[in-house]
Length: 176
Length: 237
Ligand code: SF4
Ligand code: SF4
Ligand code: SF4
Ligand code: FES
Image (cartoon, rainbow over all chains, first blue to last red; front, side):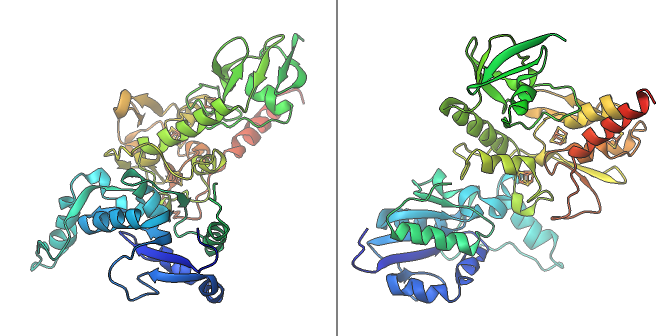
């Protein structure tokens, strides 16, 4: 990793509740310190960039892979990132995003949410090309691409996020 | 008293013949990982986490292996560490464990064990089985998604409460704890509502209906206290 230049940091939001990102933002004042040695090159909470850039040093990837968009972005992230961090319990073992797995196909959840619980006028969302298709089963990141570091928690404790980023800055690979 | 001398992790000790390796190790200050074992219940060797290496045999479950004269036992080797992590991973894969929405989150022996064996992720794919929750009992619930089949509930209800509500039914992936030979728990008259099974359950599988995440009252240690109390009553005045 390049220690002269600022670390190129990305944060990615797949199928999760954004709670892991909120925990990251909970680092408050330390984020200013982080900004001194890391440049956020892609992030739903700290960057406007729409396309995942090349040559990323570290990516914190929140959420499980539950739809086709998640999968496409994850593959891109893996290709363009040196250290991929599986960030939070949904990324690591699907967690809440994977609660539908024992039900079989995603259809059961769609029916329940959009039809059974609707007030009569319900309809299942269907917009191919616009809405990404749901995948079954919901999978953790490491089931699809190699993962370098696991940072568990629902959400991970901000202090632990900081410890992991500081270790990565020093070129270490944190282990449990 | 018949005694035997053995070495556990290079610590020499002498224990009463018949003492399990798990308890002998504890005597030497070594805490072997265990899940199905509970002081006060007959050991069954269900979870295999307590595997130790014994010079005369392959890995053996320490809770059901008696100490013997001259035995050399190792409780923490790379092989055992690997086996233990794999066993915990299998337990997680086998059921549906979503700690973030589990009543036992933060007070669960399986979760604690995952930390202890360094399981930062599960290398095995999840099975995501379709399992049920039995809420037919007026006071308690049984969530099969979280059950690791340790049989503590089966044993405490039979051996301590004397009600024998629980058994292990079916086999293989269908294996599950059953009440009253497979009735809804609430329909089983022999249940005295004592709550012992709930207190000894290591996971969030058995729970008090009124509780929600964070106030899961699991107290496996109370069993030993209860049995001590009973012995005092039965003993000489
Ligand atoms: S029983 Fe334990 S390991 Fe399983 S989901 Fe609940 S807290 Fe997690
Ligand atoms: S509450 Fe008591 S009697 Fe009823 S099943 Fe549990 S241990 Fe057995
Ligand atoms: S319900 Fe609890 S005590 Fe009974 S076998 Fe399952 S995990 Fe063990
Ligand atoms: S504690 Fe020995 S097998 Fe479970």
